[in-house]
Image 1 (tube, rainbow, N blue to C red):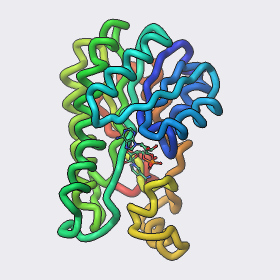
Image 2: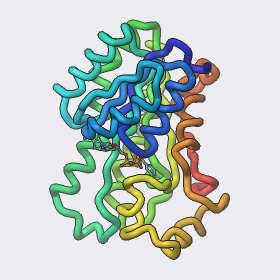
Image 3: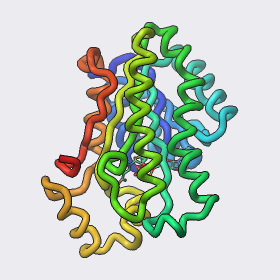
Image 4: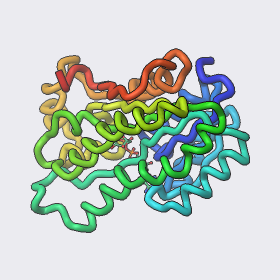
Length: 249
Ligand SMILES: NC(=O)c1ccc[n+]([C@@H]2O[C@H](COP(=O)([O-])OP(=O)(O)OC[C@H]3O[C@@H](n4cnc5c(N)ncnc54)[C@H](O)[C@@H]3O)[C@@H](O)[C@H]2O)c1
């Protein structure tokens, strides 16, 4: 039980990596609030995760939704120790010139602005409990960009970098901030990243660029998140941890 008694918020926990993180956190003894615009998905994951996990409908691009979800989490569990900014979205893989302004704005609202809003809403609560751990889900895309994902890549470059800057600024309040940078994984976003159905040929082409020869799994990301959230990582802040089978070497 590496997170026994800790209270965690995981955004975008209704599917993919966020679901895997929430499930592992609960298994490690954390009280977890699963935030997602997809309430049904979050509810299903919360039931499976057990340990009193709660699902909350929250659009992470909206300050009022976030404020309500943070208040509900504190009401349910009494404190806040861990925040995982995982919710994310991408435009489909295509020429950067074909990405519409609506798509661009959605990417930067979901992937970038949400971190600003969540930081505003949770820092005082984390500090009040003596400190805490913030984990932002960045991407190898922010370090080694692939073509066809230019504006998404830029949003993840923000996440990777701002995690270091947040770490420096929040260290005085004993709030650690780290970033996990996954390589392509099999989630609801996979087809968007690879620009079409996940055919064996398309996946093979992507996997050929990953030295360990496979895509990431939610369990890989969750294992890294448990470590960074736990007291074992009490002296680790500002790290951007690639979980990428060697893709960014
Ligand atoms: N899958 C990959 O290959 C990959 C690789 C690197 C990084 N990532 C990042 O991992 C994170 C999780 O993505 P995933 O691959 O698990 O995708 P996913 O689509 O399975 O999960 C994303 C979740 O975020 C939720 N979400 C989207 N917009 C939201 C909003 N406005 N408010 C609240 N929730 C919202 C979705 O409903 C969904 O449940 C994202 O930040 C993504 O950029 C994914």
